[in-house]
Image: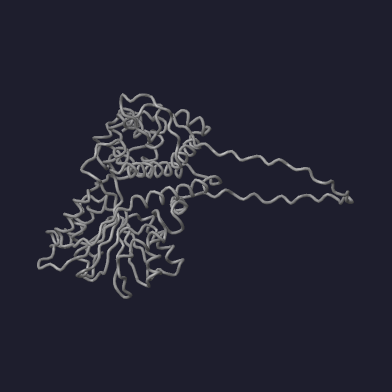
Length: 436
């Protein structure tokens, strides 16, 4: 297939898509509408080069974003037929995105904001100090001038993905809240020394290490993002807690062996991960097999306030996530957990507490960005992350999306949930599919 050949990206096979050149991929985008591109991005697994090419294309063609005109902001959708309104003043996340887009395009940030119809945040003017007249100093004997030492130039730090994640959420953390929030989440539990604990979404492991250190327990982490897993385990080694807070990479998803020994775990943890798991019933079944009687399943997740809300902010959020999302309602979680012999101890809405933590992370990162040097691939990743978190924040602010904290206890049952047909090999395949 030549690079100049127009292709229908929606119909090409996965192998053909992976082997496609960036030039052919970009040409294929030309024939797609904004909604088609959003649907394609949501449904297909793209390589790093293709993701970067798509981000560059959408920056150059903002009219191809769903529901937007060429003058609209890259992450702001306006309802058709709405009357022209005053430009909305940018928040911290939007301000950050404007700076990155300006850097990427080699433009002035104010010019980008005007092109996108965004009013930039007003800075408070500092009052000028009026100098007071000072008494004349007695003349001193002039000393020979000494040449000022010229300090060596300090190279600007180049930030990679792991650096940026930690700049956002704190050293060793990959989600908002830091150690204080992590400890609050496990407060309903009685953590026992010598018991087995499992974290199925540890990221860089900051929360695991905080809990392990505070309560003197050992927690095993299984992380599906290989890069996060490698960096997280290295951080555990540096902190001399690799034995009590190890992180193991599972890029192909979880297998039945990961939940051994059966019926021995005191608790299993997940943070903001289940909304991207399509087959949660299988996941709950395997977790249930791992937990001992009255063992705890504790997770946080993005949850719908109602079935399939028809709202612009929710559509933008779904399109902004890097992978397809399958959010449930609270009622769906209750039904699924009770069906599989979990007793729900508590469900708390943490949305109001979570949003300020997100904003605080981006505010801190915005300050750190001033002197940082960003390679092109890092800037593209930043725009993806920024758009995703901005979309999450706006969806949470509508109240149609909530962050729930769930604690459920595994109840003894006369008939345990059976491992899927096909034996361990079939079980491994089904669970791996559920966790992709």
